[in-house]
Image (cartoon, rainbow, N blue to C red; front, side, top):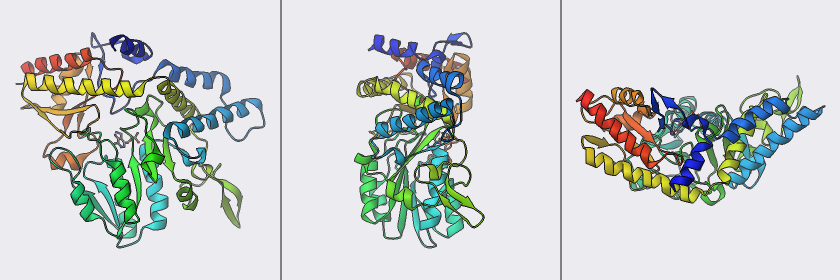
Length: 406
Ligand code: PMP
Protein backbone atom coordinates (compact mmCIF):
# COMPACT_ATOMS: atom_id res chain seq x y z
CA UNK A 1 0.00 0.00 0.00
CA UNK A 2 2.75 2.46 0.97
CA UNK A 3 4.34 2.12 -2.44
CA UNK A 4 1.00 2.59 -4.24
CA UNK A 5 0.27 5.70 -2.17
CA UNK A 6 3.74 7.08 -2.85
CA UNK A 7 3.19 6.58 -6.57
CA UNK A 8 -0.12 8.42 -6.30
CA UNK A 9 1.49 11.23 -4.30
CA UNK A 10 4.09 11.70 -7.00
CA UNK A 11 1.22 12.73 -9.32
CA UNK A 12 0.21 15.64 -7.05
CA UNK A 13 2.84 18.40 -7.30
CA UNK A 14 1.41 20.49 -4.44
CA UNK A 15 1.89 17.63 -1.98
CA UNK A 16 5.60 17.51 -2.62
CA UNK A 17 6.78 20.73 -1.04
CA UNK A 18 8.03 22.08 2.26
CA UNK A 19 5.83 24.48 4.20
CA UNK A 20 7.34 26.44 7.06
CA UNK A 21 10.48 24.38 6.74
CA UNK A 22 8.73 21.00 7.04
CA UNK A 23 7.38 18.58 4.42
CA UNK A 24 3.74 19.51 3.91
CA UNK A 25 1.09 17.35 5.59
CA UNK A 26 -2.09 18.34 3.77
CA UNK A 27 -5.14 17.45 5.85
CA UNK A 28 -7.60 20.03 4.54
CA UNK A 29 -9.16 17.92 1.82
CA UNK A 30 -12.67 18.74 3.01
CA UNK A 31 -12.07 22.36 2.02
CA UNK A 32 -10.45 21.49 -1.28
CA UNK A 33 -8.39 18.67 -2.72
CA UNK A 34 -5.02 18.89 -4.47
CA UNK A 35 -4.85 18.34 -8.23
CA UNK A 36 -3.04 15.58 -10.08
CA UNK A 37 -0.64 16.53 -12.88
CA UNK A 38 -3.14 15.28 -15.49
CA UNK A 39 -5.68 17.91 -14.39
CA UNK A 40 -3.06 20.66 -14.48
CA UNK A 41 -2.00 19.45 -17.95
CA UNK A 42 -5.61 19.36 -19.21
CA UNK A 43 -6.10 23.00 -18.16
CA UNK A 44 -2.83 24.08 -19.69
CA UNK A 45 -3.42 22.11 -22.92
CA UNK A 46 -6.84 23.65 -23.31
CA UNK A 47 -5.48 27.19 -23.01
CA UNK A 48 -2.35 26.46 -25.07
CA UNK A 49 -4.01 24.60 -27.93
CA UNK A 50 -7.80 24.73 -28.00
CA UNK A 51 -8.91 27.95 -26.32
CA UNK A 52 -12.11 29.06 -28.03
CA UNK A 53 -15.77 29.62 -27.24
CA UNK A 54 -18.06 26.61 -27.37
CA UNK A 55 -21.20 25.93 -29.43
CA UNK A 56 -20.55 28.94 -31.65
CA UNK A 57 -18.25 27.08 -33.95
CA UNK A 58 -17.52 28.53 -37.30
CA UNK A 59 -13.94 27.34 -36.99
CA UNK A 60 -11.76 24.43 -36.00
CA UNK A 61 -10.67 25.58 -32.54
CA UNK A 62 -14.27 26.19 -31.53
CA UNK A 63 -15.25 22.74 -32.78
CA UNK A 64 -12.42 21.21 -30.77
CA UNK A 65 -13.31 23.13 -27.61
CA UNK A 66 -16.98 22.12 -28.02
CA UNK A 67 -16.02 18.48 -28.54
CA UNK A 68 -13.85 18.40 -25.41
CA UNK A 69 -16.46 20.27 -23.39
CA UNK A 70 -19.27 17.88 -24.37
CA UNK A 71 -17.00 14.84 -23.96
CA UNK A 72 -16.37 16.10 -20.43
CA UNK A 73 -20.11 16.07 -19.79
CA UNK A 74 -20.26 12.44 -20.95
CA UNK A 75 -17.37 11.56 -18.64
CA UNK A 76 -19.32 13.02 -15.72
CA UNK A 77 -22.50 11.26 -16.84
CA UNK A 78 -20.69 7.91 -16.75
CA UNK A 79 -19.05 8.79 -13.41
CA UNK A 80 -22.45 9.38 -11.81
CA UNK A 81 -24.21 6.67 -13.81
CA UNK A 82 -26.76 9.23 -14.99
CA UNK A 83 -29.10 7.96 -17.72
CA UNK A 84 -28.31 10.80 -20.09
CA UNK A 85 -25.60 13.43 -20.57
CA UNK A 86 -28.41 16.03 -20.70
CA UNK A 87 -29.00 15.37 -17.02
CA UNK A 88 -25.55 16.78 -16.19
CA UNK A 89 -25.74 20.58 -15.83
CA UNK A 90 -22.49 22.50 -15.36
CA UNK A 91 -22.56 24.98 -12.49
CA UNK A 92 -19.95 26.88 -10.49
CA UNK A 93 -20.14 24.30 -7.72
CA UNK A 94 -22.38 22.80 -5.06
CA UNK A 95 -23.56 26.20 -3.88
CA UNK A 96 -24.76 27.24 -7.31
CA UNK A 97 -26.31 23.81 -7.96
CA UNK A 98 -28.45 24.08 -4.81
CA UNK A 99 -29.37 27.70 -5.50
CA UNK A 100 -30.43 26.71 -9.00
CA UNK A 101 -32.85 24.07 -7.72
CA UNK A 102 -34.22 26.32 -4.96
CA UNK A 103 -34.75 29.21 -7.39
CA UNK A 104 -36.33 27.19 -10.23
CA UNK A 105 -37.96 23.98 -8.99
CA UNK A 106 -38.59 25.74 -5.69
CA UNK A 107 -40.34 28.81 -7.03
CA UNK A 108 -42.42 26.70 -9.38
CA UNK A 109 -43.51 24.08 -6.87
CA UNK A 110 -43.38 25.53 -3.35
CA UNK A 111 -46.29 27.40 -1.82
CA UNK A 112 -47.29 28.86 1.54
CA UNK A 113 -47.93 26.05 4.02
CA UNK A 114 -45.50 23.62 2.36
CA UNK A 115 -42.55 22.23 4.26
CA UNK A 116 -38.95 21.75 3.19
CA UNK A 117 -36.72 19.49 5.28
CA UNK A 118 -32.97 19.68 5.62
CA UNK A 119 -30.77 18.14 8.31
CA UNK A 120 -29.37 19.89 11.35
CA UNK A 121 -25.84 19.21 10.05
CA UNK A 122 -26.07 21.05 6.72
CA UNK A 123 -23.46 23.36 5.25
CA UNK A 124 -24.84 26.90 4.99
CA UNK A 125 -25.16 26.40 1.23
CA UNK A 126 -27.89 23.83 1.88
CA UNK A 127 -29.71 26.03 4.38
CA UNK A 128 -29.72 29.61 3.13
CA UNK A 129 -31.14 29.02 -0.39
CA UNK A 130 -34.09 27.19 1.23
CA UNK A 131 -34.53 29.93 3.82
CA UNK A 132 -34.64 32.47 1.01
CA UNK A 133 -37.22 30.36 -0.83
CA UNK A 134 -39.31 30.05 2.34
CA UNK A 135 -39.21 33.82 2.85
CA UNK A 136 -40.43 34.31 -0.72
CA UNK A 137 -43.18 31.69 -0.62
CA UNK A 138 -44.35 31.38 2.99
CA UNK A 139 -43.19 27.77 3.21
CA UNK A 140 -41.47 26.44 6.35
CA UNK A 141 -37.92 25.07 6.62
CA UNK A 142 -37.51 22.33 9.25
CA UNK A 143 -34.25 20.72 10.32
CA UNK A 144 -34.11 16.96 10.93
CA UNK A 145 -32.53 16.57 14.40
CA UNK A 146 -28.98 15.29 14.84
CA UNK A 147 -28.06 12.98 17.74
CA UNK A 148 -25.07 13.59 20.04
CA UNK A 149 -23.05 11.09 18.01
CA UNK A 150 -23.58 13.17 14.88
CA UNK A 151 -26.04 10.66 13.39
CA UNK A 152 -29.35 11.74 11.97
CA UNK A 153 -32.37 10.96 14.08
CA UNK A 154 -34.20 8.82 11.52
CA UNK A 155 -37.19 8.24 13.80
CA UNK A 156 -37.66 11.97 14.07
CA UNK A 157 -37.33 12.22 10.28
CA UNK A 158 -40.05 9.58 9.83
CA UNK A 159 -42.34 11.50 12.16
CA UNK A 160 -41.72 14.78 10.30
CA UNK A 161 -42.79 13.35 6.96
CA UNK A 162 -46.28 14.24 5.80
CA UNK A 163 -47.97 15.34 2.60
CA UNK A 164 -46.96 18.92 3.51
CA UNK A 165 -43.32 18.01 2.87
CA UNK A 166 -42.54 18.87 -0.75
CA UNK A 167 -38.75 18.80 -0.73
CA UNK A 168 -35.97 17.17 1.29
CA UNK A 169 -32.41 18.40 0.85
CA UNK A 170 -29.75 16.41 2.68
CA UNK A 171 -26.02 16.28 2.91
CA UNK A 172 -24.54 12.91 1.90
CA UNK A 173 -21.42 13.30 4.06
CA UNK A 174 -21.21 16.05 6.70
CA UNK A 175 -18.19 18.28 6.14
CA UNK A 176 -18.11 19.22 9.83
CA UNK A 177 -18.55 15.76 11.39
CA UNK A 178 -17.82 13.23 8.66
CA UNK A 179 -21.17 11.44 9.22
CA UNK A 180 -22.35 9.42 6.22
CA UNK A 181 -26.11 9.86 6.08
CA UNK A 182 -28.41 7.00 4.99
CA UNK A 183 -29.50 8.86 1.85
CA UNK A 184 -30.97 5.73 0.19
CA UNK A 185 -33.46 5.39 3.07
CA UNK A 186 -34.10 9.13 3.18
CA UNK A 187 -34.88 9.20 -0.53
CA UNK A 188 -37.22 6.20 -0.32
CA UNK A 189 -39.07 7.61 2.68
CA UNK A 190 -39.38 11.08 1.13
CA UNK A 191 -40.65 9.64 -2.15
CA UNK A 192 -43.37 7.78 -0.25
CA UNK A 193 -44.93 11.14 0.70
CA UNK A 194 -44.36 12.54 -2.78
CA UNK A 195 -41.42 14.82 -1.90
CA UNK A 196 -38.43 15.35 -4.18
CA UNK A 197 -34.90 14.96 -2.83
CA UNK A 198 -31.63 16.77 -3.45
CA UNK A 199 -28.43 15.23 -2.13
CA UNK A 200 -25.49 17.54 -1.39
CA UNK A 201 -22.64 15.27 -2.45
CA UNK A 202 -19.83 17.82 -2.00
CA UNK A 203 -18.04 15.61 0.54
CA UNK A 204 -19.08 12.20 -0.80
CA UNK A 205 -17.80 11.96 -4.37
CA UNK A 206 -14.18 12.34 -3.28
CA UNK A 207 -14.43 9.11 -1.26
CA UNK A 208 -16.40 6.68 -3.40
CA UNK A 209 -18.25 6.38 -6.71
CA UNK A 210 -21.83 7.56 -6.40
CA UNK A 211 -24.57 6.02 -8.57
CA UNK A 212 -27.44 8.48 -8.90
CA UNK A 213 -29.78 5.91 -10.43
CA UNK A 214 -29.16 3.36 -7.67
CA UNK A 215 -29.84 6.11 -5.11
CA UNK A 216 -32.88 7.28 -7.06
CA UNK A 217 -31.87 10.88 -6.19
CA UNK A 218 -33.92 13.55 -7.93
CA UNK A 219 -30.98 15.97 -7.78
CA UNK A 220 -27.34 15.45 -6.83
CA UNK A 221 -24.92 18.38 -6.39
CA UNK A 222 -21.15 18.57 -6.03
CA UNK A 223 -18.09 20.75 -6.67
CA UNK A 224 -15.18 19.94 -8.96
CA UNK A 225 -12.54 21.36 -6.64
CA UNK A 226 -13.34 18.83 -3.91
CA UNK A 227 -12.99 16.05 -6.48
CA UNK A 228 -9.36 16.77 -7.47
CA UNK A 229 -10.56 19.10 -10.26
CA UNK A 230 -10.46 22.88 -10.73
CA UNK A 231 -12.35 25.54 -8.79
CA UNK A 232 -15.31 27.32 -10.36
CA UNK A 233 -16.87 24.21 -11.87
CA UNK A 234 -19.43 21.84 -10.44
CA UNK A 235 -22.31 19.63 -11.39
CA UNK A 236 -26.01 19.56 -10.86
CA UNK A 237 -27.42 16.17 -11.78
CA UNK A 238 -31.20 16.19 -12.18
CA UNK A 239 -33.69 13.66 -13.49
CA UNK A 240 -34.55 14.59 -17.04
CA UNK A 241 -38.30 14.93 -16.50
CA UNK A 242 -37.75 17.28 -13.55
CA UNK A 243 -35.18 19.44 -15.34
CA UNK A 244 -37.44 19.63 -18.39
CA UNK A 245 -40.36 20.88 -16.32
CA UNK A 246 -38.31 23.51 -14.47
CA UNK A 247 -38.08 27.14 -15.60
CA UNK A 248 -34.61 28.44 -16.49
CA UNK A 249 -32.31 29.84 -13.81
CA UNK A 250 -30.38 32.72 -15.39
CA UNK A 251 -31.21 34.37 -18.70
CA UNK A 252 -28.66 35.10 -21.40
CA UNK A 253 -26.80 33.58 -24.30
CA UNK A 254 -26.80 29.78 -24.82
CA UNK A 255 -30.00 29.22 -22.86
CA UNK A 256 -32.39 30.42 -25.59
CA UNK A 257 -33.79 28.65 -28.60
CA UNK A 258 -35.25 31.82 -30.09
CA UNK A 259 -35.17 35.36 -28.71
CA UNK A 260 -37.33 38.30 -29.81
CA UNK A 261 -39.05 41.25 -28.13
CA UNK A 262 -42.31 39.37 -28.57
CA UNK A 263 -41.04 36.56 -26.41
CA UNK A 264 -38.25 34.07 -25.98
CA UNK A 265 -38.24 30.30 -26.13
CA UNK A 266 -35.70 28.30 -24.22
CA UNK A 267 -33.04 25.87 -25.30
CA UNK A 268 -33.15 22.13 -24.67
CA UNK A 269 -31.40 20.44 -21.73
CA UNK A 270 -28.84 21.01 -20.40
CA UNK A 271 -28.27 24.37 -22.13
CA UNK A 272 -31.49 25.81 -20.71
CA UNK A 273 -29.62 26.05 -17.40
CA UNK A 274 -26.25 27.18 -18.77
CA UNK A 275 -26.64 30.88 -19.59
CA UNK A 276 -23.49 32.66 -20.76
CA UNK A 277 -20.06 31.36 -21.67
CA UNK A 278 -19.45 28.37 -19.42
CA UNK A 279 -16.29 27.44 -17.54
CA UNK A 280 -14.94 25.44 -20.48
CA UNK A 281 -11.48 24.80 -19.05
CA UNK A 282 -13.04 23.87 -15.71
CA UNK A 283 -15.30 21.23 -17.25
CA UNK A 284 -12.39 19.75 -19.19
CA UNK A 285 -10.22 19.81 -16.06
CA UNK A 286 -12.93 18.12 -14.01
CA UNK A 287 -13.28 15.37 -16.62
CA UNK A 288 -9.49 14.89 -16.41
CA UNK A 289 -9.86 14.44 -12.64
CA UNK A 290 -12.58 11.84 -13.13
CA UNK A 291 -10.47 10.04 -15.73
CA UNK A 292 -7.62 10.02 -13.23
CA UNK A 293 -9.89 8.50 -10.56
CA UNK A 294 -11.17 5.93 -13.06
CA UNK A 295 -7.62 4.60 -13.26
CA UNK A 296 -7.47 3.93 -9.50
CA UNK A 297 -9.02 1.21 -7.37
CA UNK A 298 -11.34 3.44 -5.39
CA UNK A 299 -12.61 0.62 -3.17
CA UNK A 300 -9.09 -0.15 -1.93
CA UNK A 301 -8.36 3.57 -1.52
CA UNK A 302 -11.49 4.06 0.56
CA UNK A 303 -10.31 1.24 2.84
CA UNK A 304 -6.98 3.04 3.14
CA UNK A 305 -8.79 6.28 4.11
CA UNK A 306 -10.77 4.38 6.73
CA UNK A 307 -7.53 2.94 8.12
CA UNK A 308 -6.20 6.50 8.46
CA UNK A 309 -9.32 7.46 10.42
CA UNK A 310 -9.01 4.41 12.69
CA UNK A 311 -5.38 5.32 13.42
CA UNK A 312 -6.34 8.95 14.13
CA UNK A 313 -8.90 7.74 16.67
CA UNK A 314 -6.31 5.46 18.34
CA UNK A 315 -3.72 8.21 18.58
CA UNK A 316 -6.31 10.67 19.90
CA UNK A 317 -7.13 8.23 22.71
CA UNK A 318 -3.41 7.78 23.45
CA UNK A 319 -2.47 11.44 23.74
CA UNK A 320 -5.65 12.31 25.65
CA UNK A 321 -7.29 15.68 26.15
CA UNK A 322 -9.08 15.41 22.83
CA UNK A 323 -12.82 15.83 22.45
CA UNK A 324 -14.02 14.11 19.29
CA UNK A 325 -16.88 15.85 17.54
CA UNK A 326 -18.87 13.42 15.42
CA UNK A 327 -18.60 9.79 16.44
CA UNK A 328 -21.18 8.19 14.15
CA UNK A 329 -20.36 4.57 13.27
CA UNK A 330 -20.57 5.35 9.57
CA UNK A 331 -18.08 8.10 8.82
CA UNK A 332 -15.96 9.31 5.95
CA UNK A 333 -12.32 10.06 6.77
CA UNK A 334 -12.97 13.31 8.62
CA UNK A 335 -11.55 13.76 12.12
CA UNK A 336 -13.14 16.78 13.81
CA UNK A 337 -12.04 17.55 17.35
CA UNK A 338 -11.21 20.03 20.08
CA UNK A 339 -8.08 20.08 22.16
CA UNK A 340 -9.32 20.59 25.72
CA UNK A 341 -8.58 24.10 26.93
CA UNK A 342 -7.35 25.39 23.56
CA UNK A 343 -9.08 27.48 20.92
CA UNK A 344 -9.27 25.67 17.55
CA UNK A 345 -7.70 28.64 15.74
CA UNK A 346 -4.61 28.52 18.01
CA UNK A 347 -4.25 24.79 17.43
CA UNK A 348 -4.48 25.36 13.68
CA UNK A 349 -1.78 28.05 13.77
CA UNK A 350 0.60 25.86 15.78
CA UNK A 351 0.04 22.95 13.40
CA UNK A 352 0.63 25.19 10.38
CA UNK A 353 3.98 26.23 11.84
CA UNK A 354 4.89 22.54 11.67
CA UNK A 355 3.80 22.23 8.05
CA UNK A 356 0.47 20.58 8.90
CA UNK A 357 -2.60 22.03 7.15
CA UNK A 358 -5.97 21.57 8.86
CA UNK A 359 -9.12 23.63 8.86
CA UNK A 360 -10.40 25.32 11.99
CA UNK A 361 -13.68 27.09 12.71
CA UNK A 362 -17.35 26.40 12.19
CA UNK A 363 -16.86 24.86 8.73
CA UNK A 364 -19.86 26.81 7.37
CA UNK A 365 -22.07 24.60 9.52
CA UNK A 366 -22.94 26.97 12.38
CA UNK A 367 -26.22 25.26 13.37
CA UNK A 368 -24.53 21.96 14.19
CA UNK A 369 -21.72 23.77 16.05
CA UNK A 370 -24.41 25.56 18.08
CA UNK A 371 -26.04 22.23 18.85
CA UNK A 372 -22.74 20.94 20.24
CA UNK A 373 -22.29 24.30 22.02
CA UNK A 374 -18.87 24.88 20.51
CA UNK A 375 -17.55 27.76 18.38
CA UNK A 376 -15.89 25.37 15.98
CA UNK A 377 -13.49 22.46 15.72
CA UNK A 378 -10.12 21.52 14.34
CA UNK A 379 -10.77 19.34 11.30
CA UNK A 380 -8.32 16.93 9.75
CA UNK A 381 -9.90 15.59 6.57
CA UNK A 382 -8.01 12.78 4.88
CA UNK A 383 -7.80 11.84 1.25
CA UNK A 384 -6.43 8.69 -0.37
CA UNK A 385 -3.06 10.37 -0.92
CA UNK A 386 -2.52 10.83 2.81
CA UNK A 387 -0.23 8.40 4.57
CA UNK A 388 -0.04 6.83 8.02
CA UNK A 389 2.99 9.05 8.51
CA UNK A 390 0.74 12.11 7.94
CA UNK A 391 -1.52 10.90 10.76
CA UNK A 392 1.48 10.34 13.06
CA UNK A 393 2.78 13.84 12.21
CA UNK A 394 -0.62 15.34 13.06
CA UNK A 395 -0.60 13.85 16.54
CA UNK A 396 3.07 14.62 17.14
CA UNK A 397 2.15 18.17 16.12
CA UNK A 398 -0.73 18.19 18.57
CA UNK A 399 1.56 17.03 21.40
CA UNK A 400 3.77 20.04 20.67
CA UNK A 401 0.76 22.36 20.45
CA UNK A 402 -0.34 21.09 23.87
CA UNK A 403 3.01 22.08 25.37
CA UNK A 404 2.57 25.62 24.08
CA UNK A 405 -1.09 26.05 24.84
CA UNK A 406 -1.83 24.14 28.03
N1 PMP B 1 -21.82 21.33 0.98
C1 PMP B 1 -20.84 20.75 1.67
C2 PMP B 1 -21.14 19.53 2.50
C3 PMP B 1 -19.55 21.28 1.63
O1 PMP B 1 -18.58 20.70 2.33
C4 PMP B 1 -19.30 22.41 0.84
C5 PMP B 1 -17.92 23.04 0.79
N2 PMP B 1 -17.29 23.15 2.02
C6 PMP B 1 -20.35 22.96 0.12
C7 PMP B 1 -21.59 22.39 0.21
C8 PMP B 1 -20.17 24.17 -0.75
O2 PMP B 1 -19.32 23.89 -1.80
P1 PMP B 1 -18.79 25.05 -2.76
O3 PMP B 1 -18.27 26.13 -1.85
O4 PMP B 1 -17.71 24.40 -3.56
O5 PMP B 1 -19.94 25.50 -3.58
